Image (tube, rainbow, N blue to C red):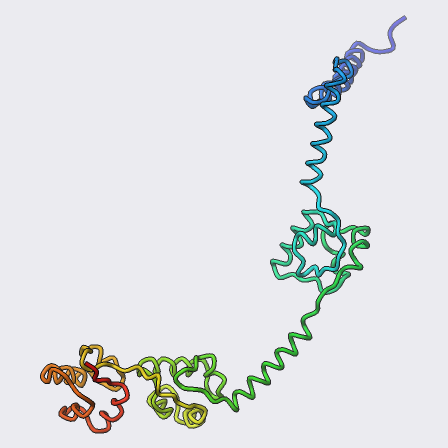
Length: 294
């Protein structure tokens, strides 16, 4: 009686059975290779003392892993827009979820409602139900708007009523005066530095970039304390130092310097009357900025 299978079919069947045997055997081989060194197989001879030592080591390892990988659960009120990583971990969120939330916040993202927290990647219904009663999102929009309105009202009132000491105010304070913007404020402070301080608010008219109509409206807002005027010691200054003052040209500064060298020392402002290059008016306006100490 002839076989129901051909020769090729028998060969194929043999190959298939061989592959099945190899596949099943590989599982046993993998289990044997992956067996931790601390574990023993049923065929190994292990004494009761060795088993006790292995079990104690296993307990210590499990305890250390628990302490390292977990944060004690502590449900508490929190704002997802401000809570730090420890607070979020205490609520039961996984570390990778916390990292994603912090990255979202760092890019300017905000959760404006409790329901929006549901959209956090990885948030489950069970976890959301656990933390939902503790979510408190602080809404700052209304308070910000009220604060902005208050600042605007104060700014408008100050624009009308501000009085400033021209020798001590800074650019920010100057902008509270109606008609003074950032550009004019910087010019006023720069000219004050070049002069050594203002003696009168009328000196603002020396600043060519500010129109007369603007000066007429802002000058009444200033008082001047001239005690802080910075002076130049004529008996020690060089010609170049004298020339830096806005009220002196190079030729006038050089003339003062040469006069001092001739007289060895200038006693007071009246000594400058000898110079033809300075008028009475120019000497008068220079007087607050020159000292004649030895």
